[in-house]
Image (cartoon, rainbow, N blue to C red; front, side):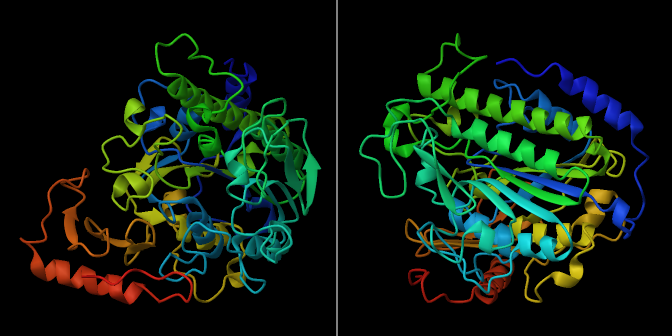
Length: 465
């Protein structure tokens, strides 16, 4: 795969024009940022060069990290897709939010979303890619949840298919040239004629949105479906038009496909940065890049092949760190001082208050959000408050829950098992269970888990032992 030759020149020029990092955020209109939030699907903590990946090249993302802030303790909303996205949109963790697992559930009309908060603050809003928390004909579709425009997939099973017969624009189906025999109700399946690659169409739509709103304040969420597998296609499910630059590698075909997907993501991060620079707005745009959960083992791809979870234990559907700790890279040239790492612990539910603060839209936040703004960490300011804890509930495979407070983490998965206690500073791989050595601390953290969980009429944890 060829990377755009203009990326470095445009980027460097824009950075040189930027001003030094500010010590405090101004609240007047000209300085509030555009926001581009890029969320990929099933990318692991160790899949990027800037997080230790050695076999797959990610030059655009590595550069973004070098010129911005790299978070080493950032967590997704869940260990699978739909609840993770619901958490991001509502600012509520999975002990409180309405969508707590994968399924055909829709956000309610009265739900307050991140998009609505920013729209109330005067932002143009667009979503491009995967939604998964509001289906056709429901009140949960993006255009009824704060987004001015949407292009992509509503249903998460539809989003498995990278060559679908249609995508959704706003609330209407748009026919594509792909042919999908025996197509499922929601558009899932495997194409026999593969012409229109959804990722490329989604990226083009996001770039058009940037062009159209370059002179306004805008929020663009780019929710790419890569590197998720097309589960309906079996071992052919790592669908990508080209596995370049890895076509000649002596790797299994699914692994070449996975690497090609990551390369395509990286290429298009560069395209977005280039477009912002060309429009003269890079220095007033906050870019964020993250993943919705840990790496998958699907369609013949194995997370261990590229060491996708790095030093972490577990993968997608696990509440150990490999299932929920994900990359977060943040860049805002001229405002965020680059070349920094931070170990500040934050999670998807913190994005709503953080972005609302930076956008000057804090007055529109709902009162009950679980999140805490990490704007001071982004801006290199003092006074960042630590979150009291991070909490997750999970409902598949016997259920489970986990809670982090500072260096300490308690995991109970499956829910019928005894809770395990880990010191993440000394044992990032969660190999040494300290439950027997620290019974008082364990009891305290288990008590916090109980406080964090509010029962749901739909999502029920099995009875614990």
